[in-house]
Image 1: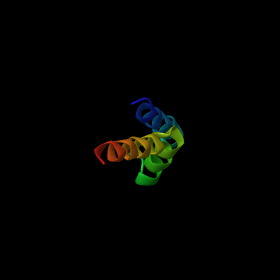
Image 2: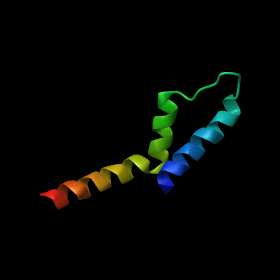
Image 3: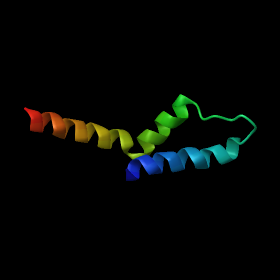
Length: 55
C-alpha cells in the first residue's frame, strides 16, 4: 500500500507543473510513477510468492 500511495503522490506532484482546466495524467505518467515508487516490483514479488506457495 505504501508504494501505491507513493505512486499517487508522484503523479499529483507532477500535475502541479502541468495544471490546467481538464488536465488528466496519461497512462505513461501513471506507469512511470508506478515504476519509480517500487509498486510494480512489489506486485511482481508478491505474485511470485503466491505462485510458489500454491505449487
